[in-house]
Image: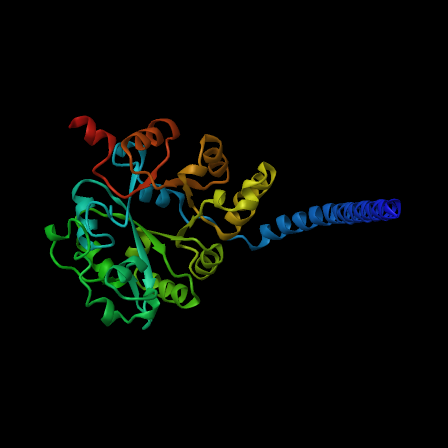
Length: 337
């Protein structure tokens, strides 16, 4: 009797192996079919996109000399290298006029500030953290200008007691403040909101305030937002904030995929939207990546660089400007100390 059960077990195992092999061969054949079908069509699609991009691309910068004057020149060393993130938010209340004033007083002209839009469609110089620290919920767009201007943005900063009370500024108030300064700063305006309302309000404001436009570089994470803004106002200089692609598992899995992604970003997307600068994560940056961006006419800037050794490395070896949260850790200041 036992041999019958043994024979049945062998037959079941045999059938299982046959089915498994059939499934494997089927999957392999399907994969082979799609590879043969996709490669020529994928190549053709890429060629069409490259050709089409030549007809829809925007002019990069209306004046290269203007861009160079905004970013300073290496003759301004050592103040040339750092860009104060949120007005050097570790040293003074972030996104405040006091922080900008302190940067200018110390000889640093390059300042990045965040911009968002309120529920009443007013552009303000703030970000979501400003709202959260004040125990409010939601994005800036969930609150009116009146609500935001009730906040004292110095309250929740470690050095806030050293500064006078200050409320959230509108973009108009910021423009008036910058006009009053003896030193003309270069403003990197980082858009926290890329909605159609934000783009429309910003382009209207910059059209009405020529001086503000001349000193401002608009930064956004969205290539589409940049394209829409520069299509309306080609004279605006823009930059792309590029999030770290190393956080994407599909790009980590293959060097080839990473290279293709980078090539598309640099050689198709960047020329189409007409950016002049790109902000890259320091973990994704090296000399080769820097040269590739410079070869397509885009100046790379790295973020976030806060330690003195890293700053010295990007100054001396990479020769690349960097975004920093503190100007107190600049290498030349520590060497003097």
